[in-house]
Amino acid sequence: MDARFNLFENELAAKFAKRFANAGLVIHQSPLPRTTQELVSLRASQINGCGWCIDMHTKEATAAGEDAARLHLVAAWRESTVFTEAEQAALALAEEGTRLADAHEGVSDGTWALVRKHYDDDQIAALVALVALINAANRLAVIVHQKGGSYEAGMFAAALG
Image (cartoon, helix red, strand yellow):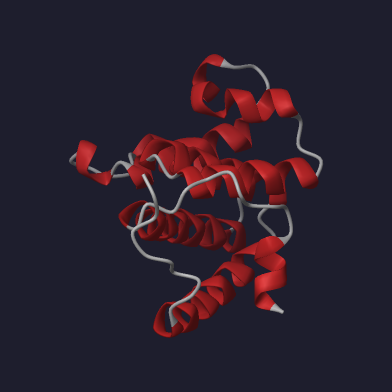
C-alpha cells in the first residue's frame, strides 16, 4: 500500500514536523543514554506497527554502534539476557506507556519503582517525554501509511539543519 499523504511535502505538515523534531532534540540532548533512547523508540514502534519508525530507530541505533543481536531481541526483551536492569525498566515503561488502553492503571507502580531506581529526575523526564513523543510519531506515520525502508541514518539530524 502506498502512503496516503506525504507529510514531508506539505507546508503545514513540514512546519509541524520541524517543531516536533525540535522537541525530539531536547530528548536527544538529555542525559538519558542514547542507547536507551533508541531501544525505547524501537520497542514502542514495534508495538504500534510503525515501519517508518522501526526502520529509523534500527538504523540510527546501528549507526551509533548498537549490537545487532540486541536490536533483534528488543521485541522479546523479557526473554533475553542482553539488556541491563536499567534498560529493562525503560523498556517496561515504554510498553506500558504505549499500551495505555490495555491496563486500567497505565504504567504500573512496579515499573515506576524500577524506573526511579535506575534513572535520575532529568533522565526520567526525558524517558517519559520520549515515550509520549515516539507514540505520537508512530501515529503520524501509521495514519498516513508512511512506509519503512527508505530511511538512512542521519536523515533526522539533517532535517533539523
